[in-house]
Image 1: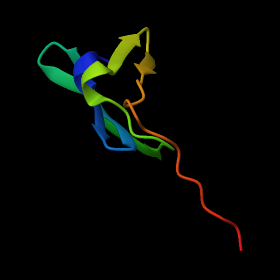
Image 2: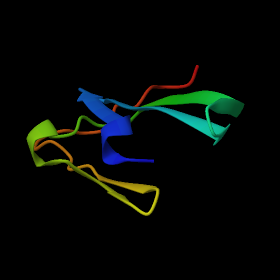
Image 3: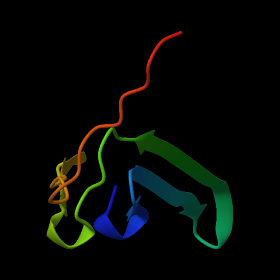
Amino acid sequence: MAKNDVRVSIEGRRVSIETQASKSQERKDGDRVLLRERGQSSYARSLVLAVQVDQDRCTAKLDNGVLKLELVKRQGASAAQNAIN
């Protein structure tokens, strides 16, 4: 997976991660095509956090197929608590 295939977006408390990859393979014997394969895959995940994050201070790093997100809590943000009835 390449960096160009991964998209991370942050909107308030929602963090979304999307990726889309495609690959093709072709084997030839001279001018004849023996095998042609095409594949495409996609992945999407959204998380809603308890507090809002500061979009300008957040970072994302992709290293050997592992995505590492560092999300910084927005100043003055606090977790919302709901009473149970």
